[in-house]
Image 1 (cartoon, rainbow, N blue to C red):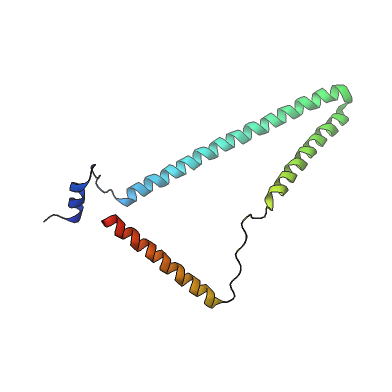
Image 2: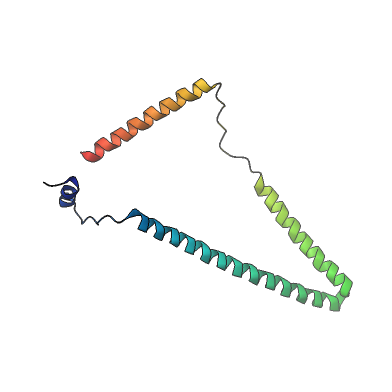
Length: 140
């Protein structure tokens, strides 16, 4: 007696691979995702450390150059003003992008629970009809 799976394999245009245990593929996918996230975290940490070192080096060089021209106190005030300005620019960028209104209009609220139940029932019927038609097409 020929089973349904064997019949499908005979009719296939290309070989059908044997089924693998689902747990093995899921664990490989999980480990791959964790590994990718870990590599990105290490890369972001390295970038952050390099950025901090670069900011420190530029700050020291700028303070030394300004100290020779304006004096030590004025040099530190100038460096502080530059950092304060950079902080204000960053805060304004964050506040400008934080509370963006949605371009999609919010749906009107339903008058009562009965209307919501009726709408959910109609959506379920439409979804069932669509799925039933897809199954019918794939078997023919």
